[in-house]
Image 1: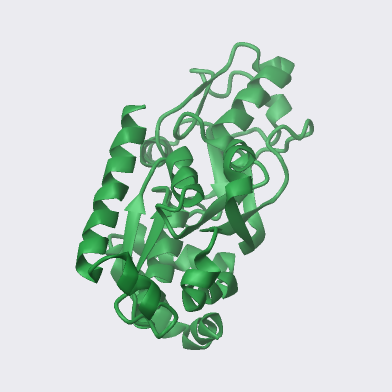
Image 2 (image 1 turned 90 degrees about the horizontal axis):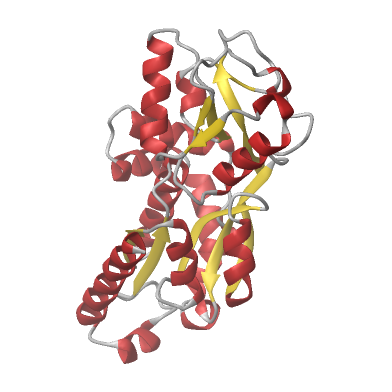
Length: 293
């Protein structure tokens, strides 16, 4: 609850600053759809590597189109709620049908789904280093002495799927899922690989860790981790009328796993997210122009 309040306060502050800089809502409505004209676009995102990459790219494209853009990191549920209640204009971070299933059921009727921006490229699963001698979830036993699967934030769909996995597979009856965060999980993964220690994590693609490390998804004969997912763009109701150019750009936004991986890896290697996004935009001008049409 504390995280939610902090997130909403951060977003509200951003909106207040934006309103002051624009001189109020009346000016926004008069100038929208005219190449930006100083209008402010509010984009929210969850601080996962994929969403840091995609939101920074989209934000810079909109800035190039003449808009002021605020990027606000929020918790999963707060991000969806912000779009649903109109405090955020949109987000490009909707993992469906599994990861954000609960949020979609709660807020889906109050947002507009513009469809996948990364279609059928997202995957969830239990991931281990390639050097571990196990290929299926049903064969996990004592390969990990701690008998735990390291997860990310509590409430994330991949964590819920992992908890269902532990409950479903008889061989995992004495295992547990340990929530942490995306950064903490990958840190533990890196340390384990450096020492060639066993580890099992809640993994997903796209993610830079598959570029950096030699990893494998464990087979999931029970299907508890779900099938391939897509990442969707969600916008607030009324955005098409208020900011048709922004709506069109977000509607056209679509890229590939190779695209997003390249931006993520640059960020992970220490590059500022804005700089990594700018480099990708400059290297992919034809794709970006298609988004602006």
